Image (cartoon, rainbow, N blue to C red):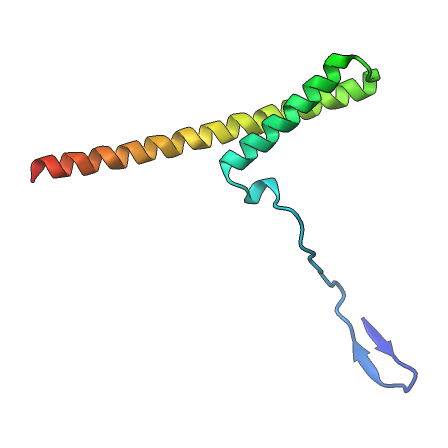
Length: 102
């Protein structure tokens, strides 16, 4: 984009300027443990609100949909943690086997 100022000097501006502001960590940058704990806490809060029965049908459906997404996040975080444990156990087993052979 080209702009003329009052003195008729020509200068350009970028078409798109991206500014980032510091924010809280997103779920994608959090550890699986943090994702699990935060999602579980939010899920428990949703369930508590739904159990009170003070929500409209629309709000209840929205809470349910969000709960399903949070449940999936929890399951993924647990699966990731399980894979990490299996990998660590495999490394320990290989280390123990190599030490026994010496």
